[in-house]
Length: 440
Ligand code: GAP
Image (cartoon, rainbow, N blue to C red; front, side, top):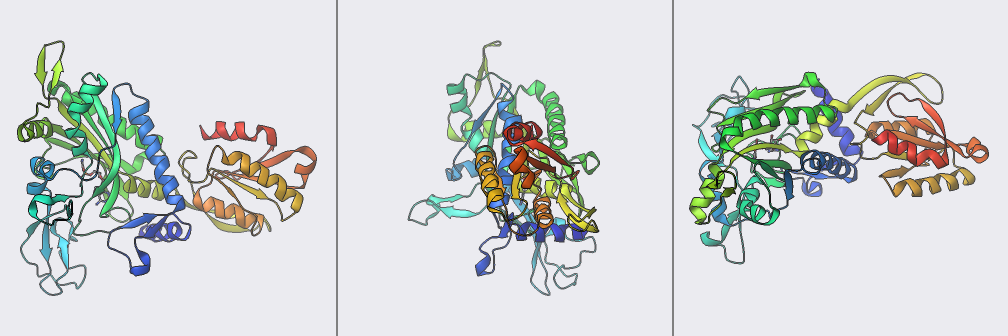
């Protein structure tokens, strides 16, 4: 099963989903760039999340806070003190690893020896300086989570948006972690996008809301097409939880390279962060409850997931190899298909003239231009029609529209469905409506 990963890494590089960061200089550990198809996939995932979390609810608002924050934020939040992983060094080859994710044998993954230094805690935040002076007073960190931007703006949102408890503030944005050990492609990287919701609620309702969000989030993963049998909940033991959480449950995915592992985390952060910021900033960060006529500091339930990790799960879930007849000879060949939900596919439609004929090309280009106003559409006239279908299957394009010689007579085209490979004859004038319906 692990070779599925190799195939996905190779396909997504070859077809412009992901490139190793700064590749021409030999790359940089745990950093990937999104190519033209990767950025479309990421945007579709973020849009699906935003729609489900913000747009479709009347008690969640959005936010986009700055990556750089006052250094005090990270002291107050406990990240300077506690956002660290245990680091060990191999005494033989001096490779460094995160102690808690060493292989079961405890042998060094680089040289095979089992001779380690004792663990020391390594803080995962990237340090930087604001302004031209590099003194401690100007030091701050690249944010390791977007959540703190939400907490420090809690008062602003309450004052400006007339929100009523319980309500949520959602944010999608970059996070940075100087991970000791990166790897498994997009699974553990040093720069990644996060989709985070901080759901503020009454302390006495927090447990019920936790259960609610657990179910909501699992339903979302299933609605995006992840197979149920590869998803499960896992409750954290008390010694695994982040410093701010009293309860954490992961939504785990059954990864081909490691078995069950975290896809998304859901945490009960209590009133920890708001209380801390209130205390350290000296500002009153509370919510006035009209019913009981009292100020309260709400509890927070937080579902949080990385866009890259979600992309990886969706790609693994979608990657399919199956026997299919070739378009030309009717023989059987292996076709690779990314069976992504059509709404998530980076390219929605490919428009293809059957052969390089001027008249066919002219119509195909007109259709292409028209469809492009609505969706991300590709025009392709190179290679045989069979080869072009396979190229689209491989990147998950749900529909191929082919202009052939009959089109000149009946103003119709064929629309090929990626998964069934069935072809329907459709009037050009009805094409847009039909694709729109299929994508919904
Ligand atoms: N604010 C909560 C928080 O940061 P987390 O469990 O540390 O919680 C949330 O991270 C999610 O971010 C994870 O479930 C995972 O999807 C993603 N994530 C965390 N570290 C990552 C990394 N190094 N590379 C890729 N994704 C990561």
